[in-house]
Amino acid sequence: MTASQRFLALDVFRGMTVCFMIIVNTPGSGETTFSPLLHAKWHGFTPTDLVFPSFLFAVGNAMSFATKKWETMAQSQVLMKIFKRTFIIFLLGYLMYWFPFVDITADGVHLRPFAKTRVFGVLQRIALCYGFTALMVYYLKPRMILSISAALLILYWAVMIWFGGTPDPLALESNAGTILDRFLLGNDHLYHGEGVAFDPEGLLSTFPAIVNVVGGYFAGRFILLKGKTYEGLSKLLLAGAALLAVAYLWNLEFPVNKKLWTSSFVLLTVGLDCLILGGIIYVVDFLQKTRWTVFFQVFGKNPLFIYLLSEVIAILLYFFHVE
Image (cartoon, rainbow, N blue to C red; front, side, top):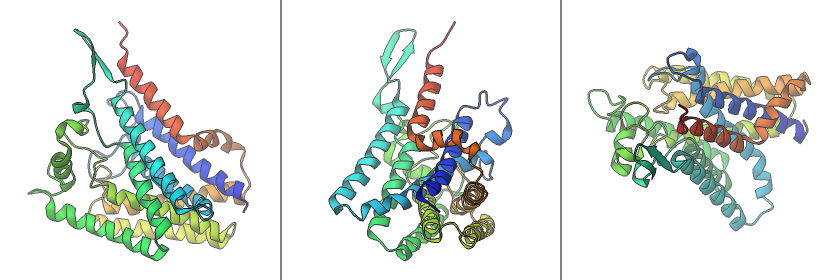
């Protein structure tokens, strides 16, 4: 398998993810939206819930290729690259939620106050998960990375159960993540789309989300090592199926929940992404059917720009009111 073919499958996977992300972020009226384009209300899973973790998985895939360049760079250059990218993505996410920086009221145009801006969000989570995973990949051996990832999932489960409120530690307003976010940031800096101050991209739930990037990294690394072989493809598919089985078992004790980003949700989405990526590799690299991929390649090669553009356009459509 050539480098271009590997990147083609990755670009298609990432492009499909970005396309679906744009669709589910702007589905129209919630009252008439096709139900699979809505997130699960709480515990449970819909196709829409797979979009964001798939983007994180794709970030990990890309990282498995980027690490080859790091081997020829000085440590200071690598760290500067990691921290710079993390900071820029986080800042773009923060500014996107503040945009267009003003509110129009009956009294005129007023600057949107910093005190009311949301701190965490989609791009912010991508930035933090990328930065943390990149540092692990650069400094640690694969076995240690896997051990830390397993520890993150288990510790998150323990924290959510032990430190959540009563009677339900996984309820919307009493879970440990919400308690921590309100303590650190206050209600005004959190997402209010659920009707209360609750951020589905809060600080605590970012830790298990790191494992989605780690899963993507190891999937990409495995593809690099095995190349275009049926053995490699079958093992990727088997790994995905095994993760699904573990996720469904864990779901019995720690329910699949995208808004809490539960550990079972992580394993479920990484497993599905392995299966989807394996399917794309089979069609693109084994069957050599690539004509359909051109559209998704455009989105896959420019994911950050296209995502930001789609969000800015949606924000402006809500901002400007026509009589």
